[in-house]
Image (cartoon, rainbow, N blue to C red):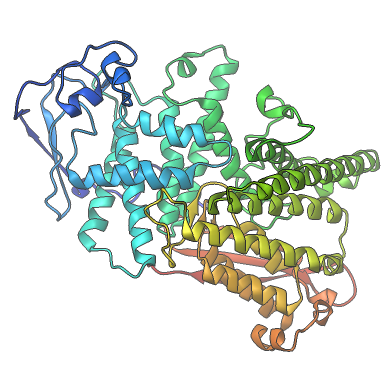
Length: 565
């Protein structure tokens, strides 16, 4: 799969730049004040970093314009056929028409919630929106993601999306990319924190459009840039860190999350994508904050504490699955015994975590105030991934696929938890404009339900459970970073067709066909997936035993395509 560069698919004709002089209407306005005072058309006291006028009025001071301040003529941009104009201003929020302002507000209010993974709330809810006030690339990227996310929402509510809006959204995406490929007015290239943040946002944009290949390329670009940042730090150059608008440690957590998803598509022990195995998990360069386990709690007093501890177990296990727990190391006796002990430690730690988590949840339910739908969803997701960790460490040494037949009750529980999590997102929270939207499809950067449901579809051979899992993803066609529910449904159907043969899954579920209906030698052992770099197509490779005897595997190849919609 070839790498996409930032300019792929964009021509100069996509965006026509016209120059005009700056104009100003209305009464006097502060020329050097904070963004909030300028928007309110009041005099700012210009206290740095936040003005006292805003603080005394209990308003959020949005700081001061940075690289947008310029004596150069201001840009007026015509985007495709919409005729939409961006008015001149010293700040991108002021500099945009009502469509851009609306899309940015949607990004701030809705998209950032979905993009705020468990370690990235501060990043996505605060740092990214604030950086958009200073960076043209981040501003236009935020507008593009917000507009695409809203269109995704509207489409799933049955509302059409006008072609002009699609073109306008691409115009914003185009401008974000152009801003990254050109120096600012002082001749400085964009900083690495902005470029890495933009790569993650571009990934989100492409995933909303079902462009998985391009999304993968953006993630790989972000990883490459982060590796460059690490090289600079090791060489003693801390310039990028000092001038960063966005904390690099938070960006690393987001990249880790997405890279793990790229490598865990099969939840197996082999990366499914053609990229360096766990390239952010180089033990020699891993920051201490990421390498060391966080403090554990005797008892949890909040979901955040439970999430932080479980997050460490999940991420460190995914790291080991792609580094130490590989067949090459397991085949060495001296390593095998050590790795087996490590699995026992994981099992013990997560079992203790579940006990503490159960007490926390019981405490929540004993309160007079009922849990919100978001809290119920968080509880369900956390238990889901705890069960997945246990399932992984309990089966990691087994090469016999029949071992999964002993986990059917746990698969049932995982599906019920995924249903609770998905339905809680469906109705949103009381502050969300998208609450009670029955057709709403979730989108987020972090792990949700799709990975866990896919693992169930693949490994739970009982027809009833497999059918139930596929129906769940059909009911909630979510996008969770590299995980796409409609694509997973298609892969699940292909797995069942390969394993079950001529019998339809629906008919098998009606007769409650047991897992052992599928012989061991017909079961899919591994799955590889490769996305087209520029097209909506993926090539799947399923490995199955060649015959009932022997360990020789053969490959069954399938291709899946999807439309623009």
